[in-house]
Length: 541
Ligand code: PEP
Ligand code: MG
Image (tube, rainbow, N blue to C red; front, top):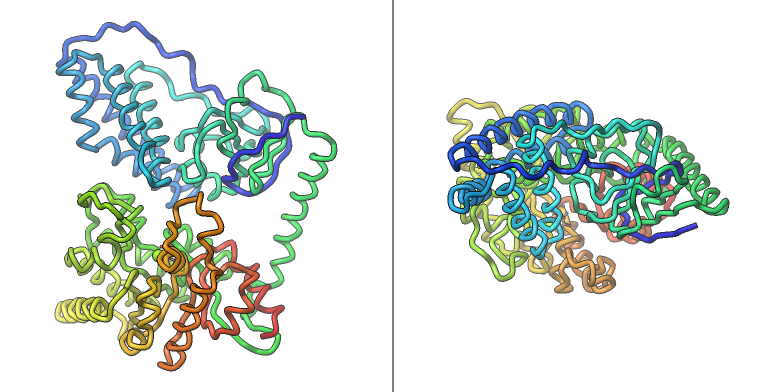
């Protein structure tokens, strides 16, 4: 037996036959480059065909796997329209006399390396997307078919790395698990695997190859483990864990439809976090009472241009409708730092996490905020909606947001556009300053939602993206808990609700403590709702 430790990318277990993924035949070499004009024409034609293929892929993916997955291919379409990329390829053809294939290969390599060299793991993972679009263009230029992705029987699929477009086209009914030599937890392939519930381990190194085809293998995606020729003991462990997961899923069903109430009668709202319509549907399926945090920025990140009011409204409407009367709390844009939208040129910042992000960006670029507020208020006519602003650190910031909100409402009213009479306007408490000022802020905000992810980062001066910080980034740190307690006490004194929407909300070991501190709601990923309800209902506080 060979046991390999990789990086856990999607939880779940599997055992079965290993198959190595081959990416088509060897590239056809040796084509003479034509004149620059003819090579430019070939490149343009490949670009148009690639865009058509991606549109089709978006449609298929939306139907099969939902909006979040489909966005991956919207991002690919956007990358193919990126002016820097297009100019670099055209320059290589015009100035170096390169053939279209060579130009695409060289420029993609440079772009892919540039992404890999970036600090943010999210941006590093975009290098796989560049490789994906480059392969698509090369296939089109060489007149090659897309690789055959039908699987002969259920397999554990191994690969050097898998492009998102390959992952989405694999036959899910025969895909037991995915293991890759390279890749990262943040890659779109890992995100797709998690969304589709396929166990996945990445970063296993160079052992995977087609020589292993047909051998028995096993995977524990949650632990990041891959076994080749697993012993009886490992197989038994995998089987048992799989059965445990299934039994656990069935057991949790009994909490469906029950209120989240402790044994001694303390009741809270159990909400879900979402970033897409698909997540809203998952929230309903998992019996969440509403959406406690809708991260609106993903729509901005997945768009090739600044989204219009209509585009924003159509997503907000779909989210409100998907929730079937349950409340939705939309957070205004939290762009900046690790979330850079390609259409929003931002100056290079020394410390982006401390830079012009979230509400600061909205106050610097008022049109961004005004357009979003109008779309949000319009959605409030269709179901219960609340709005909250992220990264508030001073009272004046909240007052400015309120002024803009008031102006947006007056504008809509003057135009006779319907909206709800009352739309609560709250804030995320995720800077130490907001926690320390929570008594004053509670006088102006309708509710607090505590973002423990950023609150931990800023309180402990520990970058939340830096995996090497390990125990130094700790949401249970006494300093973080002291700020949390202070915020909850000030909210109670002012009579406004205060919940948690950061990852600490799903820390089951902390549920009792959070309830005792007087939390009014917890908002967690949809899959956590039932486990958390079970936890609340079996506690006495
Ligand atoms: C947080 O900071 O805790 C939070 C919920 O917001 P995000 O993770 O989107 O920054
Ligand atoms: Mg945050």
